[in-house]
Image (cartoon, rainbow, N blue to C red):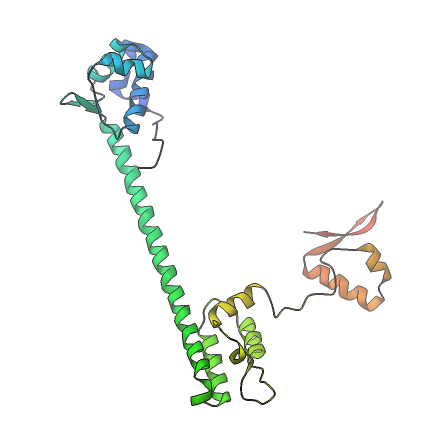
Length: 252
């Protein structure tokens, strides 16, 4: 049980047993009651009493008040010189159930992640094997078809990235005997494709900055200005007119 706190019911003071405690011992007794619960929580809800003086010293309270809190109001169960709280048992059980459920869910997510990775690795392995056997069994066109099928089988990558990746890595050498991917020493297609997609290798960078540069804008010709304005609009910029500053580009 890693959790270091337990619920304090907002209506605990209205429990008839707690009302009796408060009527006799006041809020001194009420405070001792919660101090005892806190101590029980850290001790897995079981304390054995050799003498109340020692326990009272640890809690910094009166030993007579402590003895009354534990024994006189049916707030704790006393068995064989030890005591525990039914109320606290319920909270600990709830905490353990939530903890076990969280562990089960985490285990399921981990197993699913491993299964997905294994699936991707199998796809990659198939491609690597076909590349390694390339020169002995199939023509280059057949190998390229196999390469494309393996790319298409990988999930989580958009078609645009797959197409660009395929076109780049299937460029043939001068003799036409191998394509680019086959000339690599190692080629894990799944990892390379994911890195390609994440790094946007096939995306051309804009020749315009992603903000409004007034000095750059002034030096542009009309055609470039229109392209620059459209670029800013695509990024979510709009124009606003200020009587003092004139027209400004602001990102919404």
